[in-house]
Length: 469
Image 1 (cartoon, helix red, strand yellow):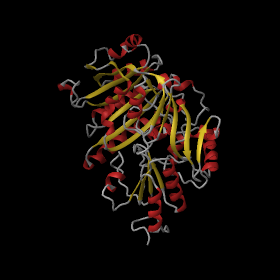
Image 2: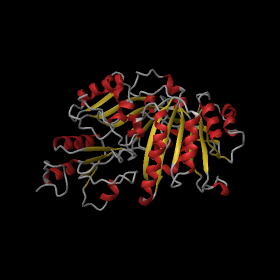
Image 3: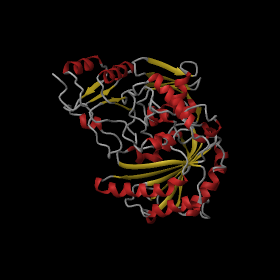
Image 4: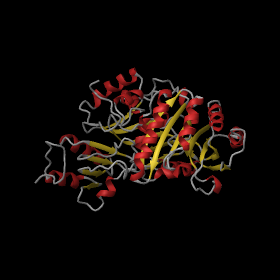
């Protein structure tokens, strides 16, 4: 008896083989007939609607080995899911096997050594709460529901990138299941070539089952946001300030129609605003002085100011909307500078966003991120001063095409001014965009390591480094 639902042409899997895999897994094996199949196959971006043949919800590294071996031996496309936030839809696959790591949420913290071991299905919100119990944190993303696994392997740009660098700059060791089923510990001393590659090379080389991460003091920070009408001058003043701000200060701007939030004056709801998010990780009295310029942008005071001393995990409340499933189209890139033309275009297009649930995000980079040697990891854009992300999000399918068209049109205006791509912010945009994420020498080195560890490209559902290049 063969598997009674679609698999790739030419693939035959007997029911007895499915039952054998299920019997040996500590976790769950979900098939289309199961009641929770539709919930289990859902990813955050609702525009991606795929139907896996099998979903292996692993409970431990042994389950990961079993699932990887099964997919390899039966020639099934293999998708690996940590938090399900892959913009390109790589967290799922039609007629293949989804290896779901969401049950693997363990974390162990050594507060004396300031080191954490974390499993890949843990979210950064949960990680940050556990670390904050010891007044510690790791530089990571900006959204609580993003998984530790995917964000880390791609680099990790977040709320403390200027103070403590990328997530990969705080990565000490990784445990990985390889295409041949081996479980390796990968660090600067063991498989150093692979350790270089996984710090920015994404999920191309294996399935990470545990991360050892450095922790930094960050119990209470100065965080929150000031809110302004989105004018060119407000954005100009922010862009000029953020590149010369102290390392302790990281800032992200969200240009968007004002939501009906408690801190937004009622008359501003629906109007285009610039929400200036900030984290100052350092001496708090010094931080108050450091963020003072953000309280006087564009020659005026903000229409709202919710900056305050807070536990570091509380900053994720600022991006709580991004944790919910949504239809979404995204384009992003790095920029060496933000010219007047770029900022004027953002204000112009922001004002005519077709559905008031999208945004343009501007990040100030530099600081500790920029001081790591460019060839120390596979992440290739440490010299960039800014990152620009367009998020065309909406809740209704009928609205999605208009929102996506707006995203692509604005990107066509901005892209000539961009310089490089970030793998964690790419949709399925083709090989040329993947090549923008890496310098030529970096890509060649990654391809050589790919040939060594995954010569058949089993791990190809990612921003793929092709082993034959």
